[in-house]
Image (cartoon, rainbow, N blue to C red):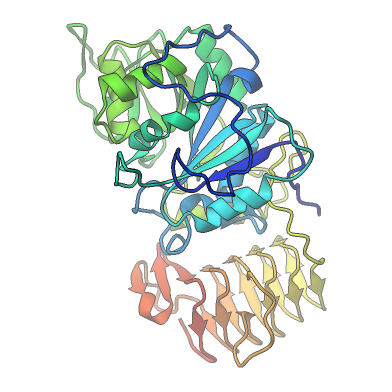
Length: 467
């Protein structure tokens, strides 16, 4: 089976410091002058194609809190591997490319080294176009502000000097760690048709969990008239003096995806809410309170926000299905791009493999693998059994040692996530023997979340151990 790799003409620039940075990494010349609040707003033609008039802003992890810990102990959420060959952020970047939006800014902060490296290596190849780019803007301190990004709104405000280099009519704001396929062209078209100041993407039905982005109260005109931070809360809103009850609006969970007109974004961040740190809880509800035209765009497809380890685990196992896949990594019409690793084919010796995804460069001996995801460079020893598990693989090929990276001979692994470069010894059993639901055993190299055993990155599990 073939995996799609990125081959479109998109280039990436990496800004590591600030707008005064003269680092040699900034080798691409600035094509447009940087505007500021003293310069008059440029007037752009209406309804240009999205690749000319829309710039995407993709957020890496801007908060220390992560729901995918310990997978995010040394990496940001967007850099977490999925489905054997990809990173979570690849799904979002691929949505942009497939939607013909090829002016993309990635704002990164916490544990961003691997994410920045992945973006740089994955999306910088090919014959480069002067009008397409993916630019990473890493968090920075400056003489004007010696703090790091305090939230999504603060990050965008402090990066306006870079965002204004491109004369976008609208900005498409995207979280960088969600798994879904959306044609953003339809979202942009709805935004323009409704002549909205701001459009929010919402799920078309209530989920049985909190999305983390709150909910919008939407009236019969499809306008967002109120915001609820937690979906289970349902206060009465006051809009223009009219008290609304449950019969006059519907409640939809937010996806954290926004389309904002350029001049509206600048005014909200600089003038209306100059101290706001967060888009979700401050700027977007503030725009509603100011009476701006905020429309809701309903999305009816598969969407997973990786709200916890269990959701991440289940999304991985979904990729092993032959039919009725919730998210199709093999869609030729809407491909998922990623880093071409140029690894050798996987070597399989007398193994029994069923309903599983096997990444490149694996060495799989006489073992049994079922309903599992095996990441690149994974070594599986003789007699090992892997069931319903996610193995993230290895960064290197290691010279054989006492306990090498990979799964040792005779080991049995079931319902587990094995992070990169972990060493599982011989005859180890990772089966959650005591049916523990939650446990923190980081000092021993693992935790248990929702009954799923998560072996931490680089952990060593000695021979004969039973977890």
